[in-house]
Image (cartoon, helix red, strand yellow):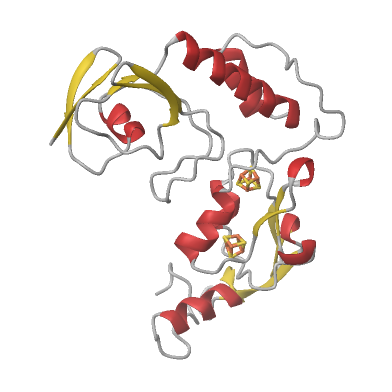
Amino acid sequence: MVTLTIDGRTIQAEEGQTILEVARNNGIQIPTLCYNEALESYGACRLCLVEIVRDSRSRMVTSCLYPIEEGLVVKTASERVISNRKMLAQLLLARCSKEKLLQDLAKEMGIEKSSFKSEYLENNDCILCALCVRTCQEVVGVSAISLVNRGTKREAAPPFLESASACIGCGSCVYVCPTKCIKMEDVGDTRIIHRWNVEFKLKKCKVCGNYFAPEAQLEYIRKKWELPEGFFDTCPNCR
Ligand code: SF4
Ligand code: SF4
């Protein structure tokens, strides 16, 4: 076990955890936008910044990435932390000024409007959290999309900004996206994921006749788990 102090509270926690995990397990809230406990931490939004003190010296670290240490002193809401967090929230708001998620987050911090100007980015709907990219890679195992370009042009996109040819249409990225900017619709026998420029034929259940999942996704699962041909001829409800 490791003993550390967070916001003046002495806490014992298992070695190998991050500051963010320990804080949350002890009811101490630290804001995040790119963290998901099912995925590897990434530290993209940096909103989870905290101040740590060691040998009378303090510095800022990203709490989702920083492992706890014996004797560590952590401040999650010091003046320095709040000021850095506000600046990060303003930068995010400048990029995606119309995103309710960011507007609410900024409001909670007492920010009405970003003081940063970003004329060509202010209508962006992607906060670059990479949750879609990491879910596709780590959970689905496909890596159909990635973060591409640099600076103001950075975005989550398919290779060469064309269509995500490796995509299987599972929709996991759609569900995980915090700003809901990856639009997906099932129209008749077709699933469309607009942001990745892809369309999939949906499988029709042999029993009830309902379309229930993209054929590409079912075939991917069937091969991965070495299931017999025809395993997905019926939907989960009719099985
Ligand atoms: S829908 Fe495509 S891009 Fe999204 S997680 Fe599934 S395979 Fe990846
Ligand atoms: S598309 Fe959504 S999930 Fe992907 S990086 Fe942008 S905001 Fe995050």
